Image (cartoon, rainbow, N blue to C red; front, side):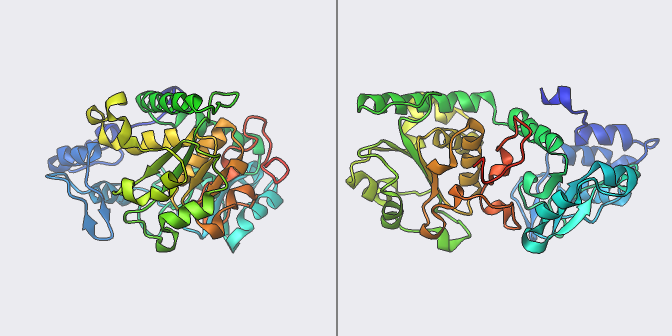
Length: 362
């Protein structure tokens, strides 16, 4: 479906078409195959550290090739700017709705940058999203703004409907959801009208999480969320904690049967699946809970909430396990410079009716 809507080339195709000696952006003949290899798979560099990837070329080779020929606009999503699409500004140099643009960019005093005709002039435009200072460290809807709400909502629907996990991931997650709901029904819990719920869920981020203040103990997790759960309700816990039996004892002691992804290896054949799918399966199962409590500043928890928003679930049933941020999903705020700390209702609110998000809709 994506290919039917968007015309695009892979980097490998681009190099083969434009990188030959007669192309617009030629590559030295002796380097062509090496660059094509890098286009297929490469080892990214992060802050001077090269990821371990046996024999793979650096992704910097692709960057250097594009940077040599392309115009690179000075735009960034790292807190400082917002990029605004306005028909009047594009066509005539005068915005149709400057108030909408100013309101969107006002949080954090971000610099307002309009998309202009000049950005369409270069033969090759390279928006470098992975390196400072142009790193795109933001949710797309917190950085890009369309002053015409109907156009903005079109692209939000596009992201929702066409950029999603593989069907195999949803299928595996569906088997787990059914198991949890069957177990819940045996205890007298029911699902909602759309077939969700029956159990509730958490995402407890531990491991190497860089935001140390967000890593709270299991006793704090339970104390901060205990009134959210129904008595003896089944809980599905997505987590990178290594010692689940010990760490989550407060929940079990309170009468909650707790399940983890590792409990379903035999049911869905996790061992035979791509290990990169495990977190995605976790996300989908957690997103279908009656209530959800996540970890603030975790993009994993954030995407669970975005899926819940896509499903039409109320954010009044989403919380965070950190006490200060606990009720943050219940309040409407303009997307601000701290955009990646959580998901915002702008991503899903009113997008099927071309309505701008607001406190009244929330």
